[in-house]
Image: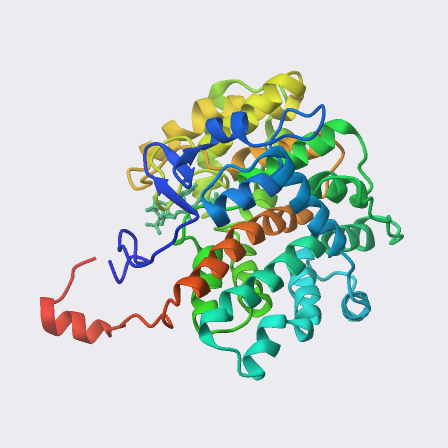
Length: 399
Ligand code: CMX
């Protein structure tokens, strides 16, 4: 286990969500289909508001519509981004990856940390959670404006779109990116709800939790998690999926047979790459987050050629991965589908996709960070051993 990426070691308390290998993620005991039905929606909308799942993760309760509207208004009231953020972004090379920009933008806000100030001022440890909560609210409130600024300076003409405080958090996010249709707003609500959390052991959640356990403030902790999310085996897989789908299309066209697709998937593996969007460290079934995005696509974009390609690949990739004899979960994960929905609505810039994932993930990991400070969890400090120690104890392990 220590040599295998700690897979299977139960080592953390993490309240906001729990992952079951067969059933997928449950947030405070509730699965995605139930949440899609029960969480409050925007007026006229059908998808849940991410503010609702944030409330659920923090309190364990499904909020009322009024509670969610209060939270939306509170976030809107805290949304102004300090000028230092834009100065820091302007100082970066034009080709800095959007995830690098997101890290730098959050670091530029860190001097405002209420947690760090309270600690320096001698705050009692029983109050830490309150300061962690204040920072978390400020960060989540500002993320739409920060991420939209990154989007518009990297992919558009750099002009910023003013916030619309009457909109919910996700709809305002789409609006500030410059995507104003109701359909995009609905997609953003769903997207931002389903990416929030995936229990504690994944790289972004664990890194945030670990760094936070040193009483690093929420800005420092979240950036640690986001830098992990920026890895291609974790969150960056969503960008890789769209690139790979485009590559597939270029190579085999829109009317490829199953045999041609199978050959293409094998060619990817033989070139020493992974098939992005497939596999998981814990899940052993199709990710319910994939399934709900598929349902959204069936409703809104059933004839999109990229959506059809995703469906066709679902028919061949699991067989190929199983045939390798080593992949433990041959089924699609959340990233296999998300890019196709975004590109359909004109958000075609794949390098931006992990920023969207990160904005959503921030809600989950910061909710847990607040709870962790409330519970007074100690600094995390597991034991490590050397390979020599293993050999002395258990003998030489043959590969
Ligand atoms: N394509 C090719 N090979 C894969 C694979 C995939 N999709 N999934 C697993 N494997 C390989 C592993 O690389 C490993 O090979 P080696 O023994 O040669 O190193 C072997 O199968 C066993 O791996 P595993 O135990 O099944 O999977 P892990 O828990 O080690 O890794 C994950 C999980 C997600 C990193 C892996 O499945 C992967 O690389 N998937 C593709 C990238 C991806 O979609 N990541 C996003 C995951 C969701 C998220 O975090 O957002």
